[in-house]
Image (cartoon, rainbow, N blue to C red; front, side, top):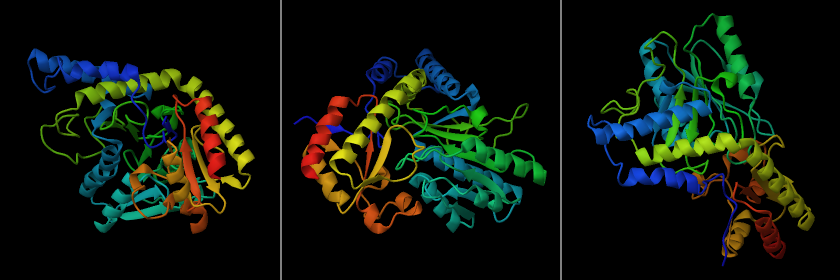
Length: 390
């Protein structure tokens, strides 16, 4: 049975070009980057080149890129690193502002920090999944150290007005005569990077999280952009993993060289093909949606129409999503009912709940997410399968 993969928001297969770039670093180029001999320096040069490529892809500088073991770790570094730094600044109680539909790696980290005495403000979103900007303005105060709003949501694809949020934060700083570095502005751009311009200067963010395996790169590697203050050795975060002092002292541990090299190549390809792939995938998504509406008119899209071109979260009236998912899987089609990081949990989607969906609607919703290897032929095959199921 041929298998069809419509779950690219969960992960993507490694591009063959990416795999080719990685292979030498599993065998002949195996040195430890911290070693001073030629074996070590050879792979350190590869890391430096990769760091430069990632930096270039978001309009950042070389020393502003911190490689991590995942986007989850990068998100933890952003929140916990800020908390550790500002804990030394005699500001109490510290306040962090996040949206109600952040990825679990932000939400669970925030809840953990809440138990440690950090005040967490959870911004509500409207039915389209857009954060309440008035609530954001009202929540900013002199104790606010960090605002974290994801660029695009992983379940419904909603795109947040990041530049507008940055402007609100900047105006608050001016009004309160607060000088940099706080409050910091962090965005999780894991889902957005493949489709949206992530230039950190245009978005005016201080911190940005990226991931390898969402852009046809390897799993087990992420990156955090951390804005550098000109003419200063000052860093806006404290490390949360200590040891040998790798990654400019912010993330100790021997670097995963093959993954870093693959990540950089994937980022390079994503930027190069961003416009073309976005248009192609967007057309396929719209085609799929029109076909679904035709065979089952009682369907609706959850979230905003201003969303990423590859994500479609669909409500199937009076049908159990779990049953549909199982039947599709048995027919060789992979889809999901939400975030892969919480799919094994019995809890209902907090993202759909946040945008106003009731329990019945949540239990009847599926997420379809397409990628650059998705074909129209595959969509036609899935439509036939779904027609039989529905």
